Amino acid sequence: MRLKDRVAIVTGGGRGIGKAFCAGLASEGARVVVADINMESASATAKELEQQGKEVIAVKTDVSDEKSTLGMAEKAVERFGGIDILVNNAAFFTPLGLGKTWDKVDVEEWDKVMSVNLRGLFLCSRAVFPHMLARGKGKIINISSTTAYRGLVRGIHYVTSKAGVLGFTRALSRELAGKNINVNSIAPGLTLSEGVVAGGGFVTQEDWAKMRTLRCSQKDLYPKDMVGAMIFLASDESGSVYGQTIVVDGGMVFV
Image 1 (cartoon, one colour):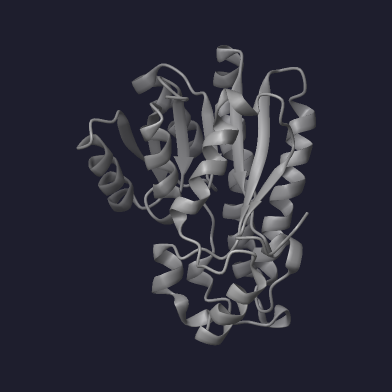
Image 2 (cartoon, one colour):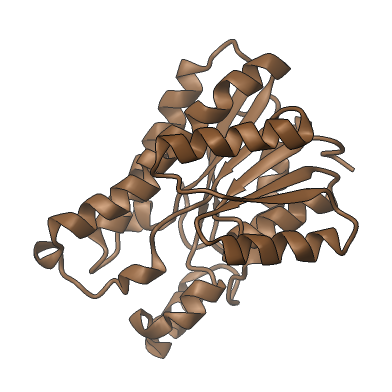
């Protein structure tokens, strides 16, 4: 197992892609912290993995709140003794509905998206940083989106935040140069996670059909399709990879 006894935190780990990340990390031997603002979802994911014999805890975490992120890191260290991997997956997306043109997005909604999708990356990364320094190494994996490359009608705040993830990844990678902490990101294409399926009204059947034709792989994407790239970035195999973004979208966006 590539991640035996490593300690991994996944924000937004209670459902969707985050849940798949938790399962993937655990399957490779990692001890997993399921961090989610929805404690019911986090606990359900943790219980499911525990029943498979995995070492896992659920921690209620609001990534936009500094005290909450510091508590997340502290609980990980208290339970497992350190932190090796952070997957910054939590994001505000499907609740938006993505139904507003850019000039109709109110300031409160804009700020909400930025507080989770960008402020959250900053706070969570800063919370785990001293613990990775104590380990002498670490892996930070940020989740962006292919919308940062191709744009998205009626989702300017989400797209802007995900473009910010790319810049954050590159800047933090430079900031941590020489500290043996790899910072990279993954940009998923539109993925059939629970949230997307439940709130799928903003994507029509015609949209889905067109998207398939634009992909090298003519199939839908599911959360499990994101796990391989994440495991690679979390493992020693990516030890010389810094500041990069892996696009996982079936071959639509080339960067």
